[in-house]
Every structure is written in C-alpha cells, then in structure tokens.
Image 1 (cartoon, one colour):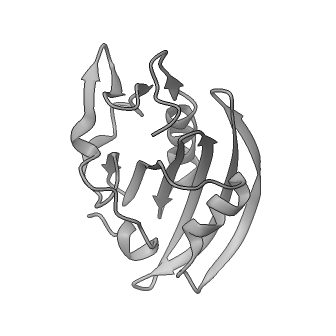
Image 2: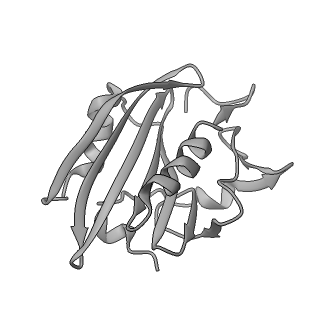
Amino acid sequence: MFWLPTVLALWLVAGCASDIASVDGRYRHTRYDFTVGFPGPTWKRGEIEGAWIAFQRPGPQTMSMQARCGRPLTEPVIMARTLVLGIPERRIIQSGPVQLAGGDGWTQTFDTRTDGVAVRVKTVTLVIEPCVYDWTLAASGDFEDAERAFDAWWTSFRLGASTPRDS
C-alpha cells in the first residue's frame, strides 16, 4: 500500500521514471548519469507518483527518490523544508547537514500521522547543480530496520562522468 503521497506533498516530475534502467546491480538514470544501489532483498520496486524510483515492503514502508532539475536552487536546508510543507501535524526528531557525491545536503526525520496511523518520515536532500535530489523514507512499524536500508541506499548514490551540469 502506497500511502506516502498522503503523507507528503509530492511535486510532479513528468517522464523521469522511464529514464531509470537496471545496470550491473544498480539503477542508472540515463539522462542525468547517476547511479544508486538496490536497498536490499526485502524491498520490492514500486511506483509513487513523481518519484524517479521507489521501493516498498510490508509494514507498510516506502522509500523513494526524486529530483528537480533545471530549476533555481538554494541552500539544502531550504530545499529540504519544502518537503514538509502541507504536513500540518509533524514533530521534528532530528535535522542536520550531510554531504555526498561532492554536494551539500540536509537530512530531517519527523513523526506524523496519516489516516490515524503513526508514521516516521526521514528525508535527505542533496543539491548538486543542476538538480536537487530528494530521498524519502516513510515507515510505520520497525523504523530502525527500514532506516538502515534507507541510509545504505541513499549513500550509494554516485554521479557519472557525463552528468549534465547546466540544463
């Protein structure tokens, strides 16, 4: 069950999911030339509107990656805060800076409720021109186990040599 869209105000990124291909045990975005690993055997590929790639497993638990490219960018903390707009009932657990693939980022974890169910959400936002990359984990149940898989997944992100820097 994909209830994540009711938790987060997702923006639409038309046509980007079709640019993801499985290559040598990793997922590669053919236009922006980045790769990201697979989160593990208990996670199954799924669909979330607006996501470039998404996974799910029972719990319910979902994780996804999406990006906004070619739009004006600002500091990672500001870009990350846009992810929680429209979520009125939330309690921040942690937030702080991260770095990956030569870019600056921001992570945040918060508790919320959807349809009366407690949900913990973790987001990671990475700013590398010309894109902002966002990873989201939403889980009820065993958040710590899901978080370990999520952290291994988003930190597997790598840019390729031909990644466009101005589009």
